[in-house]
Length: 535
Image 1 (cartoon, rainbow, N blue to C red):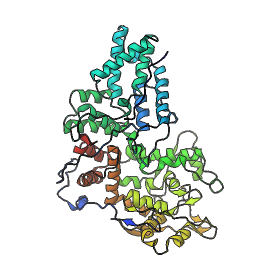
Image 2: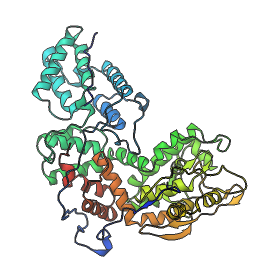
Image 3: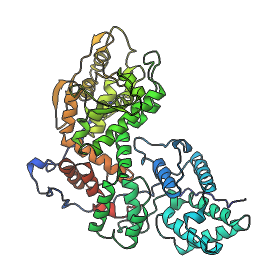
Image 4: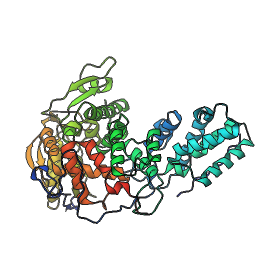
């Protein structure tokens, strides 16, 4: 049939770089010191003496994961990741989601909508039973409108969808006309974007809060139960919102968000797209890279299901699950069917930081990279800022010198050392890991020198190996605050430079005392989360 046509309207440091002071923790963000902003254990209290911040929040488009999970939850039809183009983002999938979709994205979305709608019988999904075709159409529009748009339909929206049904009915049977309505809904800006009514600073209504809460914590649209809670006003006060959010964070669906965030926070999700020189790393195949990613995802899940879900545990958990490809890479017997669980040597590893998926991304095609790894630790895990070099080119690998020796020789010149005294120590602490992320004891025939440490942080130290670096990060209030800020960037859909510094300090206190889920619960009940952002 000739379905209605629809057009989507586009509603590390270098020799010439410099150090910018890292984001330091506020005086009161160490629970051991007490302090006027400290909350009682298990409770959240925001008493920041600051003007309430209404953050600018663009009309955010669903991420690729949110789109796929939304379609799957609504229709029961799996949408493979390959059905949509790769996202244009810097680190997190929410980066850039205020940008208009590209033409390739529009085509992919239209194709998914056509394919999914063609396989549905909307009459059964809306439980039309013996209702007339006209009544069934109204029921499909009403029920699907609530679920797809994540709020009740406005009268004009209902009228337009009804007119679309009538138009499609003139070109084909009743069920095809209903499919045309579903197809258009799945391409509507009201589905693709988080649309929040009201003016900047207005409290969000229950349905807008349900939408924001579910996409933030589950990466999926609100469940029927959450929509019902919004309908009866259960989200209109902090206590009701907290109760619903607590249930969501305790549910298995929350693991999807926890896994996605940490894979992106660590850049581990990028391991399947990095390239390695085949002559140097012949075993680094797409199969192995996918196995490394799965290994990282499994570790994150275990930390939040079998572990205590605390920030420090991320750098202390060394139990991994091996599949056939990764077991072979480690030189261990390959599991027959189920993944094999093994404990890594805690004197050599630092939890998620030394996963091969992380170390391989933070490396060069033919070798490791102390500078990339040091910049990741200082710049991303501690939120320090250093100007990335425009002229950094190391000499090519040589059997005559280790990676560390070449880096030291190249970066010791005047003008380079001021930055590299900060960048290099944490990178050198990770020198036991080669360019594909596996533990080694020699580099080009020389014993690995992993003397390193931290400078310019709240946990400065000098020592040998990754385990000491992991311990320092696990105990760092600066790292906790930086981690909290990264979460706020994701929850808000964009960087939180304008967010309340005091509020971030409060959340990092809760993170240290009560764990990641408790911090997230506090984050989604803070005033900023419950208010409509600026345009």
